[in-house]
Image (cartoon, rainbow, N blue to C red; front, side, top):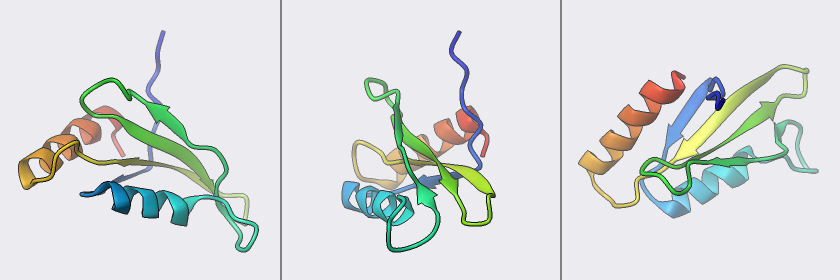
Length: 91
C-alpha cells in the first residue's frame, strides 16, 4: 500500500533552473547548518512529478518540503500542477 508523505511546504517553480536552484539552496551543506540530506523523487513517470526531502534545522526541528514544476511553461500549466499537488500533498 502506497502512502503519500505529509508535506509541510510545497514550492512550485516555473522553470527547471529555478527548481534546481531551490534544491541547491535547501540541500544540506558543510558550510551552513540545516538542510535536506536526501531528496526523494516521486511520480516521475506521471503528469505531476515532484521531489521531497526532510529539511533538518540546526535546533533538531524539521519540516518536509516538496518541489515541482510544470513540464511546459504557462500560467495554466503551473496552476494545474500547483492545484493537483496541493490536493494530493495537503501542505
